[in-house]
Length: 419
Image (cartoon, rainbow, N blue to C red):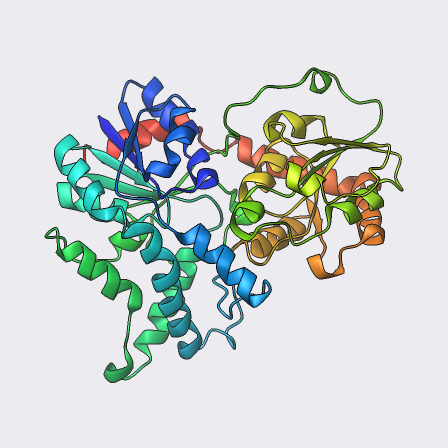
């Protein structure tokens, strides 16, 4: 079958799709990736064929300008919010208005026309789309292809959508406004597609998080579990990673998105390194040159690197200090490594995911505003000295290992196109 991977131009979101794409190719299917031109080098670097569609979106530039003007203040809408008293109709409606206007439209509108044209020309049997690339769902239905949504984290999209629809149903007809349906319905109608919730959720949803890290979602949605297989892009494994360290190794990874989107991390790498200097450990800190330049004296137990493949570093670590991003968290858990998590509230679901990891016993959460050398030292010391954290992380690894592989999922997806 012909399979199109549709994603807006966001590197980290695409990389999570690569293991499935190669599993499909290895099974004999023809696979192509469609995204905005900006993602060309990233996609072709994985060996997958690339079809550029539309023009690059400007979301990253807009977000950096917004945070520069506001001093990094958060907006009022949090899609990970779970408190009923906060999730009022007014809160959800205004949040949807902002999210549709300043996020989902901005990344989809520049590519939807070209993506539909590509699908009508190439005629894929299946479209796999990144969860905010709604244009992939429109293009699939415009050409009659099956389509599935592929999550990169917890499904707060479906949970929020269900709560929005429930609150909307409580309103008088004159107040029932649905910004997402209005936008998607207008775009889809141009290609003869009627709006339905399958444009929001796909005909099925692929989910990589283990059951204990899931959030509650509507029972009628079909989920296809798949094991998270870490993929960090093209990489060279350095010589010093070939052997286990003499002392417990602590990996520090604050992700790449904060630098790309907001011009820097919310927490101080210097404070983290200072705290880790108090422990009898070896530290490997993956920090871009711009962040390294902000550091003063570097502790003697720390090795600074601009990049090292996290899937190669994690197995050598006794613990990790992370920002709570899904790719980083799941890579650590795939190797049974407990984590000290300091999630950046700007980064969408990191606070939620970090809390779920802590509830599972596989980590400790430190609020970025309260993070300093002392809290880092205390948190990592607890992870190292209390074996329950490592046991919990290894239990999550075992659950992840029991999930269907990308090869298994490739077989399942082939069945969807025959129904």
